[in-house]
Structure formats: structure tokens, C-alpha cells
Image (cartoon, rainbow, N blue to C red; front, top):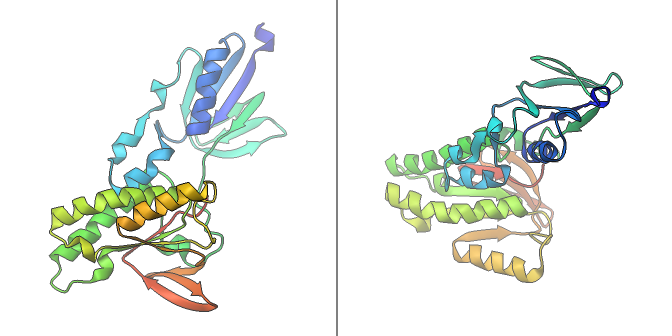
Length: 265
């Protein structure tokens, strides 16, 4: 039995990696396989809650829990390390903490935002990718409201938020913002009618994975809460002022103190 014992190496303790390990540890005995899980952080975060932490409706700490709390230490070897190289021919993975051989490899290293080559998007727009980016975005939004309240010369752009993308993440984020905005306005003594939330989507329809009935419900719900939608409006650039969009073949500048990109990973 020992000779047939497989080395199973799982890279990444995000949703996919941790699901893989927790299911394997139930189905496979320690005699059948040596399971190693490698992740660059000691914690796992719920990626499906990032939009809430980004809007500030939950604390970023609510996203986190230790990876070790989810794995059985007698079956899984958890290593905190960053993967630097995968050698498929040698069946070996190099990390900043050592080299690991494997018989079976599961790569679940997560996602990064995809800006599709839009000029300036990576430099000027916030991305919703992980705990750190969500925390940074939430703090920025509140700072903008605080700056507006403290400033003698009010700049309405401080209270303007542009969201690029009307897919699942963008719409969920906007929904959370409509819950967060009243709290911020109350906290800083701001007239909520001054706040401007705008969603910009290149496709002719938002939430393409859902029926027209559900889409219309979401649009009506968010519009009733002050969200403006610009559908079939491609973003061609992002700069320090906001988004540059194309309307009827002409470029227009949309200005805001906060620009958020949610249109793909």
C-alpha cells in the first residue's frame, strides 16, 4: 500500500483549492495519499463576499478564517509559501520555501482582474480582487465622504462613484453601495441627493446570465435607490478624472472621485 501512496499537491487555498482538499480528506485515507496544500497566506477569504467588504457593508475581517481550521492536520500538510515555478516534466513545484514533488497536481491559484487592454484602467481604477484591494476601496470611499464634509469648497465629484461593468460583481457591489451610502451620509452630515452612482456597461444588456424579468427587477430596484445605468456604452480609457466612454462614435469624459472596475477576471 505504501508503494502506491500518491503525492497530491494542491496550489492555492481559495474556494477551489480548499474545496478540493476538504473533499479529498474525507474520501481518501492517509495511507492512500499524501496531500499537501500550498498557499501564500495563512488565511482563506470568501471571494464571493469581496463586494460587501469593498462597499464597507461588512468588515474585511469577516471574510477571513485560518486555513488550518478547515483541514485535518493528520491528512493534510499545509504549507505557507508562494509558488515560483511549476515544472510539469519533472513533476515538481518550486516555492520560496522549498521544492515539492507530486504525482497529481491541482492548480487553483485564483484570479486577477482583466482590463482587456483598456488604457489606464489598471492605473486609475480600483479592482475587486482580494482582501487588500477590497479594504483599500472601502477606505477610499469613506475618505471621499469625509473629505467632502470637511472641505469648505465642496466638490461633488468626491461623492460620485463610477462602476465599470454590469455583470454579477458590479451589480452586487452597487447593491451594497446603496445600503452603505445612507450610513455614510448620516455619519458625515451629507445630503444624500448629492451622491451619484453610475454603472457603465459596454454590452446591450446587463446581467446576461439572467432572465429579462430578473434583470428588470434588479434595474428598477437599483434605479429607485439612485443608480444611473449607461448600457451599450463602452469604456475606452480610464484616467485620474474617471472613465472615457464612447457614445455614437464620440468620446466623452465621465468624472468621479472613485472609479471601480468589475467587468472581468
